Length: 272
Image 1 (cartoon, rainbow, N blue to C red):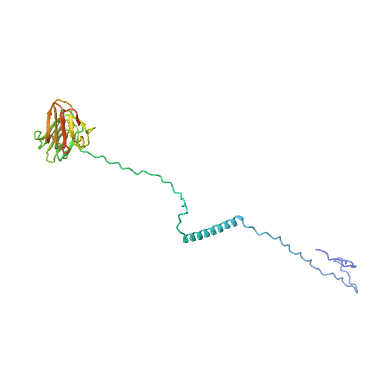
Image 2: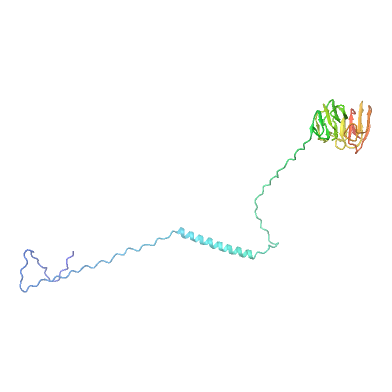
């Protein structure tokens, strides 16, 4: 502790030993010591003011961007609403705006193939009409050596309605009333009656369909021995309109009403 300051012109007191207290003296007064004064307390030290932490700039910037975007959306919506209310049809003086459209890739439509026509066919043998084969007109599209065929009114080779021997292409109509049909060495019979000639104005040996294989008109043949020809009203060797056997040149008129024309060993016929 700090000693109290000395008073001016005052002697410091002298202390005796505690074992021997000073004798009391008459007229002696004990010295008066000044009262202890507590030193003045130091004023409390105030810490330096601290700076308030600054908010990150990025957060302020984010809020600013959000506010700008919201304000822009409000302005755009207001302008679009006013434009929709005040929209008027464009005048002819204004150029139309070109808008880009996605390029369309041309696609080919699927082509459905036309189903091939199914022709009825049969070959050699004896066949029951209506069961084994159906009535109709059939032809052999190529010649076949020693071909023999016959329409039959019964299942008997002698029950002949009509028949033919030929090495050339043939055409025959089988009627529903026929009982059977016999074919021997004739190849394939078919309901495909399309043309077998390359030209409709020249032809040689066989039975031909008028209007399909050949056209009507006047025809002349080349010289040939043992020639036989016939105009037919049906595809039957017995359905004869007119016929002839000749070893010389022949001229014949094939009418548009003729069904067929038969030629055997007559050479080449040419339209005049």
